[in-house]
Every structure is written in structure tokens, then in C-alpha cells.
Length: 209
Ligand code: MLT
Image 1 (cartoon, rainbow, N blue to C red):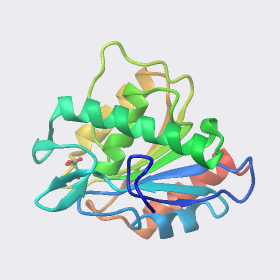
Image 2 (image 1 turned 90 degrees about the horizontal axis):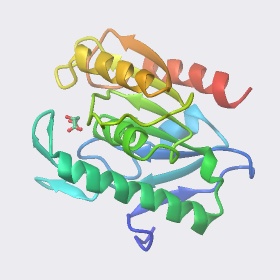
Image 3 (image 1 turned 45 degrees about the horizontal axis):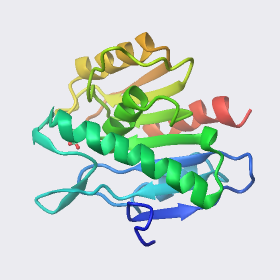
């Protein structure tokens, strides 16, 4: 789809006016198509809004710049987070989406910008599913996330995202008032069926009851 809303993206309307829309945020080197099959499994009937990250690292799309592995360019992260929030607002108006029904589903770099959106732009996301996220930024003061539900899934042997970093993010989000459920996978950075199964259980408990 054309980038007249600011990002190249895939959009699919929700099955009903009250169904949520998943904001899909791919990992480094991915694109707007990567997580669409995951959304179909996770939440059939949900809308899909899936932008492609605009930062290129050696040709690989990302959502914000990094200085090295796991070391983020915080100025760029702030700018890109506000830019993504503006895209979500513009897309909600353009497509007639419920702006209170946007739930992020991010993997790795996409999960990190989703976490940054929770922390810097509270109110944009009704919830988030974060696969392999770490602390992107620590805002001062913390936002008031007022019970926003967040599911995190991380790998115990992930060489890119140390377990302590994932734990630190869960603590930070809880301090900000989010309700965080965190699951641990025995493996590393790659998503597994168990990630998806646990996210699906969480989703069904939160959004389909
Ligand atoms: C990031 O840069 O957001 C994290 O290091 C994860 C990744 O490799 O994309």
C-alpha cells in the first residue's frame, strides 16, 4: 500500500466495528508482510495495520537507529516513536478504526518500538504483545499506563536480549501501571510455536471473552 500515511504498510479492516486492530511491528530486516500470518493465527477477525520500519541498517529495515547491538540511538528512538504514534492516529482516522482498540504485536526491534510507544506515547496502544523485547528507554517521569495489558515472551538463552533486560522491562512497565504477563521460553531469539500458543491464550483471555 502507498505510503501516504507516512509508512509503507499493509492494512486489513477488522471483521466488525468493535474488533481490535493489531499494529504489527516486524524485527530487523523484516517487512510489513512478516507478521500477518501470525496475526491470522493469533486473532482471526482482528484488523491488521502493519508498517515497514523506515530506518535502514545495511539495507535492513528497522524502526529506529542503533549505535551497536543493543545500544540504541535514543534521540532517533524518540523521534521515530512519535512518528509511529502519528501514523497510528492518521491510519485510525483514515480507515475509521477505533483508536482505543489498537494493540501492538512486535518482534525484537518491533517489540522494542512498541515498548517505547507505551512509555513515550501512553494512550496510543490499548495493549501490547512483545516478543523478545528489552528496555528501549527509561522516561522520567514514567507515564501512567493505568492497567494497560502487556504480554511479554522472551528466550532464556537469547544472546541478543539478555534475560535481565527483559525482566527490567517488565518491572518498568509495571511501575508505570501496566499489567504485565511474562512467559519464558527455553530457547533463544527465534519465535517458537510455544510463543504463539501462549500469546494466543493471553489474547483469548483479554480480548475475546
Ligand atoms: C534492537 O535493535 O531493537 C534489538 O537489538 C533487537 C534487534 O536485533 O532488532
